[in-house]
Image 1 (cartoon, each protein chain N blue to C red):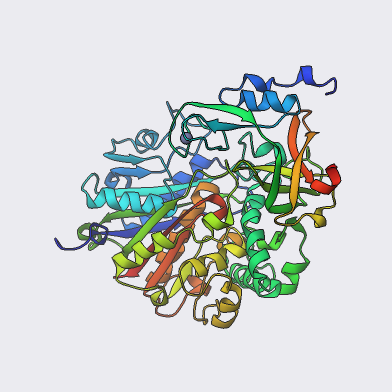
Image 2: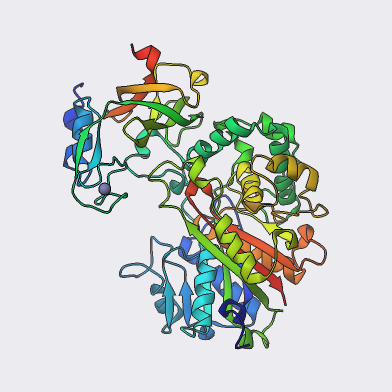
Length: 388
Length: 139
Ligand SMILES: [Zn+2]
């Protein structure tokens, strides 16, 4: 293995997601712990095996100092060798943990997080109301920040609203079929249903936009050597990359700066994997809203700028389509759990590659793409995972 | 400016951005201008993003610009705001941009590249804010 890229010397060996709901009777820390223990159990490991944590501290609550990943050492009752507090979940967390494991800074890293007990009495989560002094005074919300990017795209490319609505309907119908989804059993949805739903921030209607729900997700990353004797077939990290255009929700995102965000990260990820975007069998894309789906297909180079809606209408995004995507129902319909949301993408990618994804399983999926955040947030990240 | 001002936070005391808000309280628009490279920037930052100089000052802006992008919000994040309202990213002519409302016209009249000029309004919390209005409407 000495010639292999460091990322290729590690594997994802355990994943878990808790129950998802609009409101859970628990704290964020409690559901995060549940997810962490379930991911360890999935891997055939225990708390005693963990020596790295990327989680932050999903307070309020707990007995802490300056709350962060190091506080989990107290909950786990044992010291840690590595912690990560920056963007600890989803792709950035997984890549940081993989790099730490590959470098020998720790052997088994737990990446986890979520939210619970915070939605009561509020129609939308606090984190959808950016509190920067140049944003909050205008009654901005994250959907409006993404809308500012999308409106320039519409002005220049005039995509077909029916095609876009069909994408939202397809993802929501995948969630409808997923018994674990918050929106399980709801629908089926048509493009007309999406277009008839109430406008939130133009051009986004309610059914174009992701959920804000409760639950937690986790994954375990360890060395390829260790992975060989564990409970599940290891899933390889084939490649990955991140781009940070600037901090989110301070300056308004600009179409000309961010529509292609992620392209450089994707080029590096596919380069490490020795693959191209056409080799991806299943896409677990960060679907904050419908336009983010076509943006990412354009960013990946699978079609030209302005052609994403046409392209996906022709290619197909269901389990039998050319580009099956968001097979669990995505952030639109399965769940979006704040900082834990990005990890859900990796959980579903791993289940697809194991062949245990449930009704959304893509036959013989060997390569999966998971992504995080998006252009309205002004950062984007991608990770390619593969069956071993 | 109304009798509520004395109940409000004095935004002019905010570090880094106090001078901007103090100007807004006088219905004046200012922006950070770098004394080393001469460029404007926004939001205020302790160092110029063009050359990293910490030697900059607030200078008056013409308040004239164009709509780079806009969205009409129909579901406000809190009940304090009354929908619909138009949020826009306005390119101001000195080479900086900011998020602001477009006022004095119907939401469906707002368009990308529309010329606008600053128009001070009072926000739902009683603070003055630098919004923008179509150039025609403000004449
Ligand atoms: Zn400068």
